Length: 68
Image (tube, rainbow, N blue to C red; front, side, top):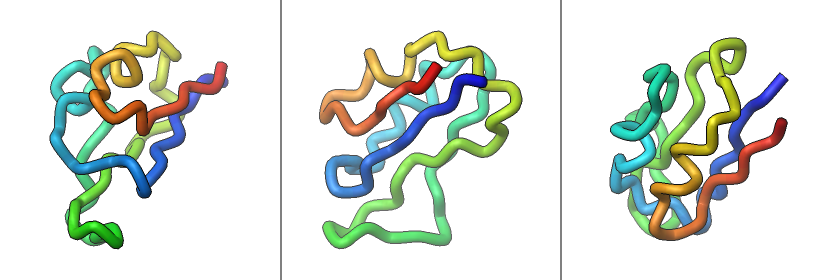
């Protein structure tokens, strides 16, 4: 089953991955703040992830890894 892994050290919470996800299963985690002061992206429904890699391709900081 595909899923994404977001590296909090690189994610700056820009939201491009949220906008690019065709299944709308990525959100910025408002409950967490990274060491750099950002709300990182998080996968909210792993079962609906298709592994399309749209989020990883849109990420300007290469903070997302897609596992298939």
